Length: 155
Image (cartoon, rainbow, N blue to C red):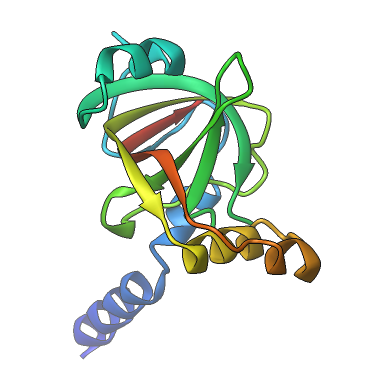
């Protein structure tokens, strides 16, 4: 009977632990999502030049400019020229810590150009903690460089 009770408690403890907690509590230098390395990572500027408007599977590095303050479910990477790229995480399988703005990240996945709708732009602005006035000012969709990451390294 004790074995059954112990097994039940163990299953309950594992099942009740939120998946997001695994990523949220990690520290700098950690990998989120798939295990990736920094080998062959290129700058955002080099990536844009190589893409030629096509989708591209690559590894890219950049400075983290902003992070979703609700869950850590997206981040913006900034290049040396101040241009940003929205990074989301494949199948919403992992998140990053919310306090990593200013750090460097290496992301691996697919870069593409996509139209971001007004509703999604407002959603991102809300996640970022922008004011109601700033959110209301969003009235046009944007064609943006976006990245769907399978793995992230925070440096």
